Image (cartoon, rainbow, N blue to C red):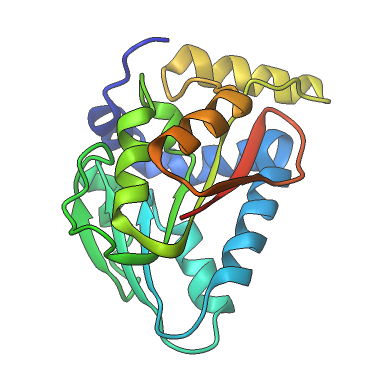
Length: 205
């Protein structure tokens, strides 16, 4: 694995991120994204407090707000100030911080999401520990990430190569991440049914 300076990398690509990410979802990660969003939507209840880690330009938060009946409190967190700047339209608290050291008290959230963020770390264990710590007992952590799985399509394999070469993320073993999540304190880890070079899972806290 190689080191990734996420804040400067994503600051530099903030203007083009949504377009490039849409291409990734269309040809490689879309099935995992759908599984992830379906799981999060099913878990959401009015009055919940949600933390969206590595929120990017806010795509996930906007969809959740549009599909949720009743108010939820949303906190958006990203290491890139320029990515967060694209979230100004979202009725949420916005914070610039690192997922390896979340600036929240223990058991602060009912639900924590992290879409396409955990794979930007050299070692995901500190972030997983923080995710579990910040989520209350009985709550959930939902992840979707680049996974070390084959793509069915040539363009998917090409996109995977481009992601790796650009330094935007490592392709993680979903089996290993499952094990690390349990070691971090998750009571149960559920891998969602999806294919391609991506995976989604729910950590039951």
